[in-house]
Length: 89
Image (cartoon, rainbow, N blue to C red; front, side, top):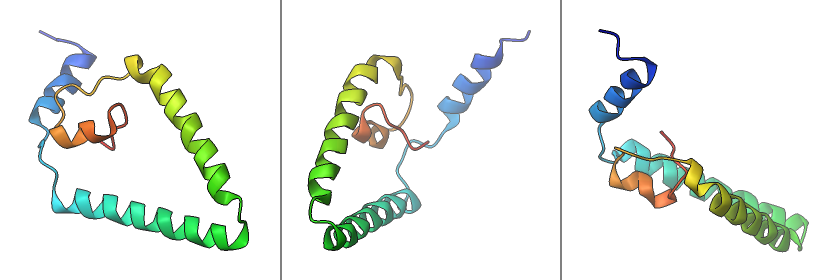
């Protein structure tokens, strides 16, 4: 009996390893480091870049708060809830 398209992916989610691996943690540290480095270099060129960055962050948080009910992170590991509705999976 064919249970459908979504059944396949829900089954895959159950089989997914829910523990954060060293590779995942290193990737996240790398992304944060590169972001901070690029923000520092941009600040040296434009002193208002922190203001612009803050405005963009506020805009993203407003967008995320309005779209939060549209996202589901069911059956993912506890690490995936760090970003609430944003998952890197």
